[in-house]
Structures are given as C-alpha cells and as structure tokens.
Image (cartoon, rainbow, N blue to C red):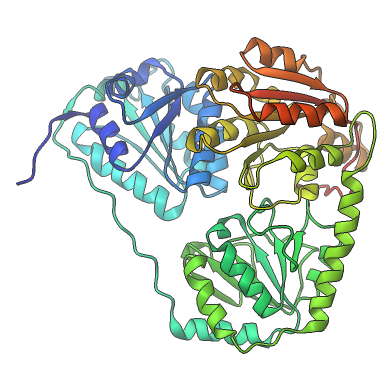
Length: 540
C-alpha cells in the first residue's frame, strides 16, 4: 500500500531534490526564501553552500552539472538575487548544463503590485532558460518541479521556478516522484551502415572531438588508429584524448595548434563527436561530415552535417569499429598527420621553455603541466589565460572545466570550488587571470569556510591583456584595460588561505610542489609578462 506523507511546499521541494540525487544547493539567503532555507536546515542529505554573491552560486551549479552530468541547483532571493544569478545561468544555458534555479517571489497577495523587489521574473530569465514558471498553488509544486527537471535533463538546459514567499510554509497534497529511467536510443543498423561506408571512402579522414565525448575516450582512440585519421580537439576539449596519442594533433582554431588548420582543411571526411565547434577559416569546404551527439536536437547545430546520429558515443563508436575491421588506412595521410604533430610538438616545447622575467605565460603553463596529477580537474577562467593554457598544456587525462560559449570572466574560482566539493579526493586547480579573479574575490572566503584545499594560479600582469591586444590590433586606444590590483596573496591570507607571490620559475616550482600537501586552499600570485598571444583572433 502506498504511504502518503504530509509535506509543506518547502519540505517537498527538498525531499524531491534528495530523491533526484542532489547533494548540494548553492545560493545566498534572502527573506523571500526563508521557508526553503528552514526546510534545508532541518535535514542532512543536501548541503547548502552559502556563497557571497549569487553569480558565484549559479556558476557553481553550472560547473557541477558540467562535471558530473547531474542536476546543478541554485537558489536566490527575488528581484536582485535572481538578477545576480543570470550570469551563471547564461553559462549553463549556452554550455548545455542541466541546472535548476529556484527564486523567491513576492507573497501571493502582492504579485503584480508595487511591492519591494517585485518584477516579472519569468520574463526576466526568458533569454537564459528553456522553462520558467510561477508557482501559485501548493499542490502545483510537484507537477511544476517535475516539468522543470525533465526539461533541464532532456534538453540539457536551465529551468527556473519562482515561488511566492508565503507559499513555502503551506501544506501540499502533492507527493514526490521517482526519477524516470530513460533508455539510450538504439542505433539504426541501416544508418550505421551508411556511416561506415562513408568512413571507408575517406582518403584523408579527420576526427573532431568535443568535451562530451569523454565517456568514449578509449574506443575513439582505437577508431582513430583503425580508420587512420588525425584527432583534433574542439575548443576546451583538452584531456578527452591524451596529447601523447600518435594521431593527436591538438586543438583546432583559437587556443590550438597553429599548424592544424591547413591540414584539417584537406580532410575529405570528418567525424565530429559531441561538438558544435566548426571555426570558419579552419575547416574544409567540401568534406563529408558525420556528427555523433547525445541529443537529437544538437545534430547540425553550427556543423554542416551529411550524416547525423544521436546516442552515447561510448555505445555507438564500437559499431563503427566493427564496420572498419578490414579497413586499410592511407599511409601518406598518416605521414602528414605525424608531420603536423611533430612540427607543433617542437614549437610547443620551445614556447614552454622560454626564460623571461616576468615569466612568459607559456612557461607558467609548462610548469603547471609538470606538477599536475594525470586525473586532476582544471577550472579554467576566461581571458588571455584561457588561450595560453589551451595552446600550451599537453594533457593526459585531466578534466577541464571552462565557460566554453558564454565565456564569462570569473568562472574559474566557482568552478574549482564546485569540483572540489564533488570530487574531494582529486587534485583541483583554478587557472585564472588577475581580471577574472578580481570579479569573484569575495568568495575566497567561501573556500575557507567549506575547507576546500585546492590551488589557484593567478596570471598577474596588471591588465586585461586580450582586450588590450585586440584594441591595438584594431587601431584603437586600449582605454579601461589597465588594472589596479590588490596584493592577491595578502587578500587570500586574510581569507584564511596559504598564499605566495611568485616571480621566478624556481619559486613557482617550489610553491606548486608545496601546495600539494596543504590542508588549506593555496593561491599563487604569479607575475607574468605582457606578451601578446600569437594568432590572436579579433573575435572570441
């Protein structure tokens, strides 16, 4: 016999999120969500992570969703609280991370009046959410929550609920629902055969791999070897395929191998796996393109597709491998791949060993590479530092988190904190510029509060380097790009961190080695030179 439990709206929301496997809720308290905060406080299954700014809460929810594939949850006060969430929700929305945002709202009797902080929140979040609803009755909590969660998961997107302040304490007859098991789509045999035939026809094949293909890492490497293709990474897909693989020719386009585009443009068949990256000027004009994506709606997004198939690459790629059992790769093309790899390998090695004072950005990346764990999580901020890291870091199987399409500065620190909460046993590094760190500086205290030992490396050159260089390239005066920075190390120490100012390669090596055993978060404020990024795109 089904047991009926009695809940308030707030209690039921928390219980439902527990059933869905949510472990953390990120946010800032406000009077419109007092009822929800009370329900969170009275249970132990879900932790509330109190941050200093709602933007950080939403960025942490987005980063958790990207890292785990589960639902990221953030909550906020009505009005200005929700406004502050929007930056992180934009990141989740464009990077297709399943996130649920819950905001308070004016009491039921005040909706539509000149009540303090009242705004039409559904209209407010429309641009960065696929579903947003105002809850107006306690018995609607589960139908609304169920639709929000299903939308977030099925569309890999942001959903949002506005809940009036006085609704949280009301009793509801709704009962929680169990998660729906969704079976992966079965591959269509005829469709797979058509793809295999196209793969076999290739004389100059290339593979373009996105970050979502991580689950198929091993089978994709075997496919590359059997098919005889080069492996290129889409923007931000570092670590999906090891840099050491003989067919691996690094990233395509900005932040990648500068010699790759000329070879990639010669491809006659391209297999694009879990990516919508197709940078103009770096891609072939007449190649046949096959796309594998997890979600049907992503087929053909930004990529000119001849054949598209939806499903988990880990399930689909073995079928392609089987179909290529008798395939003989084109040795002349493999030679071109190896030559391209070798040319960039030599140049990358030289860039990473440059000696300069202040330190060259590529040298800092190389020193980090030498100290980092093979399975570390790297939270990469946005800016000039992003391109240097993507260009010069030779990944093994590190997991990279970044703001891929939204590209917001300030992503690194929140993402690192979320990663450490999700995977406390892994080494976590935040790689950020001085501009990005300055945007979220107050939340250094959050890492101390929750005892999160990870490393922040700050590329500090006192300027918004990318904006400065782009303005110069366009013949403009770089107004607003000079930064007046605090002593980041002292600020971090005041927040309970271990911190060092770094001026040389030797100091950085020593500081990175010492940081590994620290029980506290560690900030390394590294003085770097104002070196223009080579091959800087004027748009990003």
